Length: 460
Ligand code: PHE
Image 1: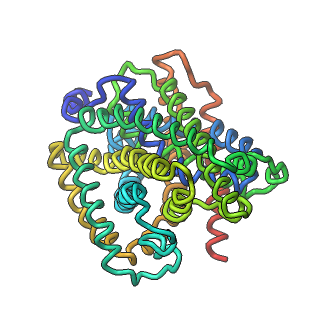
Image 2 (image 1 turned 45 degrees about the vertical axis):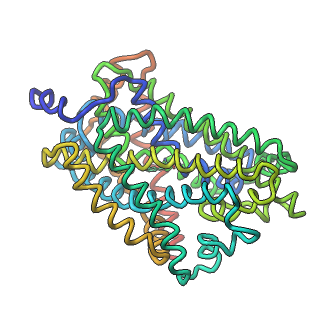
Image 3 (image 1 turned 45 degrees about the horizontal axis):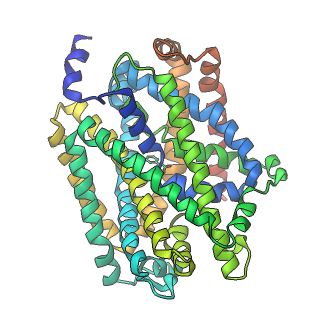
């Protein structure tokens, strides 16, 4: 263990448990909370979705989060190194996560850049009367990559700026870069998002939107697709299975309580999700009322929600520009802390493997990622390709490594015993034997079920 001690000073560390918690919340709270959760909940039973959601959170999401924390904190390494220390044949699992994170970074950065651009557009409603015919909207609507120069010049400059900012954060290191950014960004995000929700709730028709979101459809509980959606949302939203939480946990002081931290992060993430549901549906209720139609006609998620529906809302609403700046600004702030976390998975792995300096590894990883991102996403064809890649990564790549790593650690390497002891060493919240069963059986079974269903869906 003397080599572990030795490398520790060089790897970097968070200065306190609080900074770690902020960074972990920064990773978890991202685009998925703001533009994915509200629609997933609405489509899958509305108010009744709370049941599968909580079941997924408590039986699989939090237990898996604690497994990642235990692994990183006990073995003190990036994903490949932590897995290798758990068992010498397991390093590949970590590299698989590294590869996935590299790909995610390439397009996550682009979405942040578009959101930043649209925050400025909101001020003078640059899209005019027809957001659907404007820049990103026209691409999404027509699916036609022929928009050309406007699009390229509109997105390339912000994309370059995003990459420069993110590379600077990475080069500054674990505490001064990632930690310090999270300590500033997370409070800013919570305050501005709460302001957005308050403004949205004052709009005419807000209650109609909330009604649509929360009215329970109890029949939905009998549908498998609803349960699949709940587990899928929880895993993506908590950022578990990507190697992120392993990496961050390896930067936490040896005497820190990890179990308690996990619960704080999990509940903060879900709390933010609920807040986003309220804000987004209040705004959609306003839009439906203004257009004299129903919420189900205007409800949507992802790129369509951000770059078509919100511009339309901003056009109509009394405090439109304010709503736009708060909404797109929140996407940027939430997105940056998540982007930083995926890139850190790659940088940390490269550093552990090749013993590179912080700045050297940041450049070795960041410059190629930035160049690919800028080349590919400066064109609309790139957006289309990445949509497909994203689909497969999120559905198969992550679920596969999640199931394999849980089963391997529980049964093949029998490491959950060690990790449980480790998680119970400090702090007042302890995991029991039940944790082993959730990780070894319940969570992998649920994920395998999802995986098989997705495969069947894709073959059909
Ligand atoms: N948890 C993030 C969100 O909810 C998504 C994410 C997943 C970010 C994986 C980084 C890595 O948006």
